[in-house]
Length: 141
Image (cartoon, rainbow, N blue to C red; front, side, top):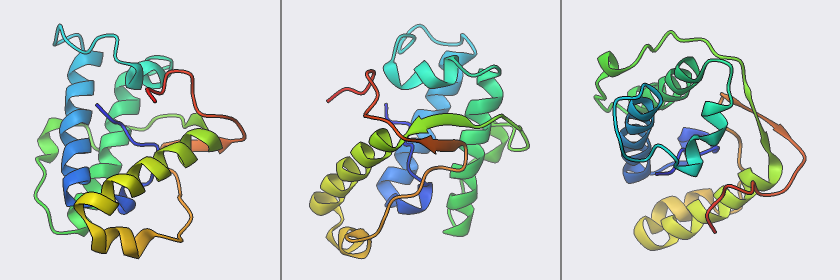
């Protein structure tokens, strides 16, 4: 499971589809509707949010918005796309780590996308507000 800190505009088709699917799984976990993934480290920052369900829906709403921009047909009925959530603080180190991780994936599976992004600076998903700091301890490296 990877719930990217990166803005969804950077993801390729496979990445955008995967984060939608994995976000929906995270939503089920946060709602107590699954037995698996309950201790997955990607969920730590959502569980720490004052309203975890609103946070995951706000996260997924931005993914849905990007999908619509690209002409994809993700099922909006699976989330509350009007959910409002306070921003989640995230570190510049975490964003940078994910950026390099994404570029490495794109280098192998989508070289054209890699070439488009190489040299750009990463931006966070709209739910996240950056502060200086290292890669999170929960990140699996």
